[in-house]
Image 1 (cartoon, one colour):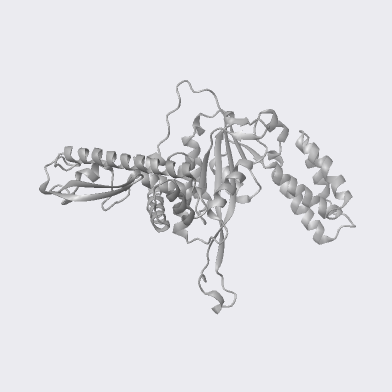
Image 2: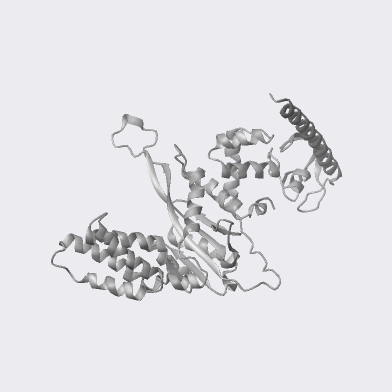
Length: 414
């Protein structure tokens, strides 16, 4: 091994051991100073005794002696040190160690890689132990009541942007494990995870290359088979935490999924709603291929001027042009005409959501790229090669992903 690397590792180990001893001494001093009283009732504990307590921390295992006693008020044995430090009964991991392991598990592609990462930053933990922590903490997240941050003094005027989308996660089907013993076994089941991004319009910026970025954003994601009404409630609750009630304007950008627009009418009726431009473009190309054949010069010549008009504030003209296609053409077969009418009606349904030039003039987004980007980020962790989830495992890890992305994780250890 490289001599400098070996020396650095040795010195780091010395520093970690010094820190471990320092932490052990501080914790022991705190434990010795705690009175033998029930932390809840304040009454003196009965039949007190000293017992060993080992805690696995970021810097290693600390070994302590802590007082236990019986609480008459609670009718159970109590350890004042555990109560004061916020430790559950029999908990062996320190809160900081828990937090680091949980965060690592949300960022890397598997529990095995999380264990390797923990080993690399000097706090070994098995993949099974990390999995266990994620399941415990993810279950606890489901019971959290997240507080609403207080507005900043003299808060400047702002607008809120909400983008919604959905993506498919791979779960174990009813025939998982059947192998080849069963014909047409349903080993895999695909279910949608609904997700969204919330940010203040004034938090948009560009990097040096001109690429857009969000200085601060917040996310929502719910487990598979969450009902749209429940997802809508989660989006509305997070938006309220981020200033929905104080926003000058609320911009809502989504694709054309029917459930999204039903949700919008139910939860965000007063928002300025926009159909994602990229999805609209895809539907225009689908229509062009129906009319003129896929990949033909005629299809391109028909669609490009319409997209330019749509993009630059002439959406009314575009819609009127589309309405003309509802009149049956003699040369158009009935099945094709039915498809044409379906695509045209898609745009007629969204004729009030196509004001892309107005959105650009307001500095607001025309597409839901941030929501699609969030989906890709979550898929890197939750839809890796070979990953097939059981529902609790997926749910608990997803909850932690959202908690850490929103920087709400300190609340879990409050």
